[in-house]
Image 1 (cartoon, rainbow, N blue to C red):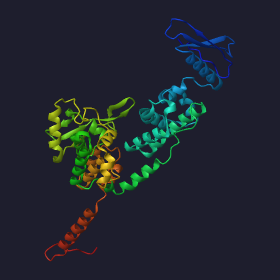
Image 2 (image 1 turned 90 degrees about the vertical axis):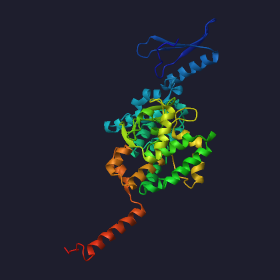
Image 3 (image 1 turned 120 degrees about the vertical axis):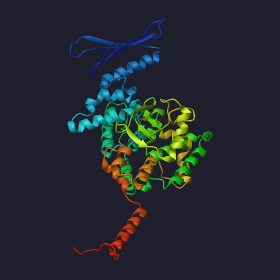
Image 4 (image 1 turned 30 degrees about the horizontal axis):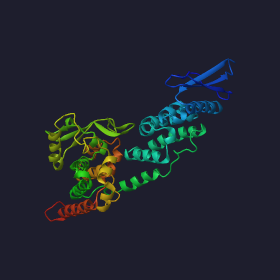
Length: 401
């Protein structure tokens, strides 16, 4: 069993390996040193199963003494390593900067990457994590703060000799925001044009899935008609559906977490109510009756498992299908944009649309209210009709002011 002593930085170590027959871990590796403060002799030992493991442990202790690094740091999970070095990593930061950095670490970095060993954190893993934060509608500053604290922790890992370079220094992610800003100037570039396009997409995805699983088409139609995130659709329970008032209480979302998919609260941490329009009522009724259990999930995969945007993409060959239909830039999240755009065009008041969307800011909702070309044409026709009435002999007359 390992002792609790750890050699201080810079001390000289002596070592030995003892073989103890008949034990589960017969090799005891031990290092000794003179404590530089108390001048007393200290030691640390570890029992392992082979001579190679014993020598490796001694070498790790020697590296720790030379560099001041916990010999287990190389195999630590990012969450554990970050906790151990955070004080060093964020030294010099003012509290107004430190607080959002630590919030980003706790709320985004740890759920996305905390389960991985430090040496397994790659550029690709961080790219995918950042893309996930953006897809989850995190603001630019939120992503920047989360990435900044990760850069600092991984820089400490470079200084500790655990990794050779900092993989968190990724670039290009801010272009995602520029693209989103450009598209939101015209929300229809993010949305399917009409109901026929939606059902055509749903049918095509079903046909490309293994066993022609109808559930994928139901997910796509339901997401678009409720303007919901795929994670929220995955989290729907039968008990959340009100077949009397035809509404859905959005209470949770299912998202990737260390160890697999897990349920958590909605993005805004608040429940909201979403109408179930006529077009999805038959679909919803069928699935409620099929499940029967109020605690059961309304939507699951073909084997009854939880779904996610990545599962939907892979199971339906999403990228190939949308490209073949002429929507090569369409993402799963754009089903939400589709629903919000349709509702805005239908004249849903902005304060109601904000409640349905679960937006924290009214400004975000207002971006869906840009009129389409037909709406502008109709506005001109309406004005002409109004002026014509004002000019007619029997109608009220325009007066100069």
